Length: 158
Image (cartoon, rainbow, N blue to C red):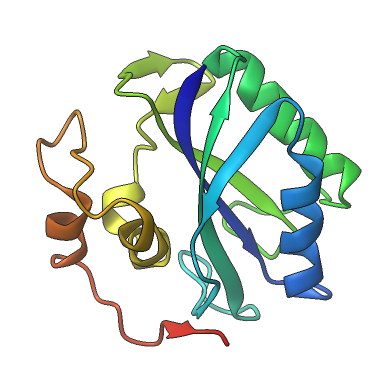
């Protein structure tokens, strides 16, 4: 079984219910071991859209990375995600952040996630679960990466 970290986000509809539905849809292929708190975060990339709810989960899977990606994309569709513009609004988004200490560059998948170190909305909840996790490409801990991003506007939800 591989240990992985997934980012989950939603900014359309009942955002919290969307996150819960995603958590419930992951097993049995992906077994959630721990979940971060949920944070409300400003949109990133395309800023003229509703705020997101974001979280990170630590999980285990027997799926190889590309099969895991296919599985997650299938779940997103089943959970109501519709095609949209890049970084646009979405009912659910699930991204692979880390998969063990794998470094992978393939046409459809890069692990670790290529922009996670730029995204406070990922690093804040990831730091709740794994502050000492070392990024295998950058050689820095999640805690160190978090100090280099702007976390303003990120609010932990009750």
